[in-house]
Amino acid sequence: MLVAGGLVIGAAGAVLLTRFLQEQLFQVEATDPTSFWIGSLGLTLVAMLSCLIPAWRALRVDPVRAVHAE
Image 1: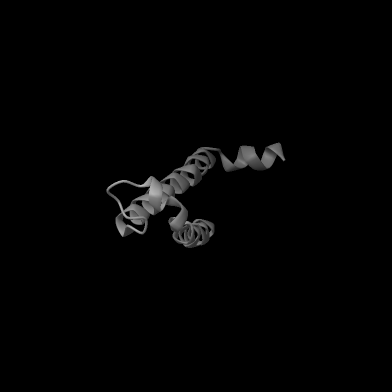
Image 2: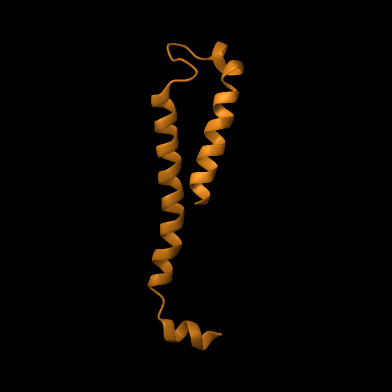
């Protein structure tokens, strides 16, 4: 949910800021949907990876040891 909210807010901000970037882009329009999709997909993959690594480590911990340590 946090990733989806961040993507929506980020995409809206990117669309609003395209007029400032128009002069900096060559051979790509500022509102190119492919660029937005690729950027969103890349950020989603990074967010998923950053969530999966700690979850994978937590799955490897023995629950009895974790409760006993507390």
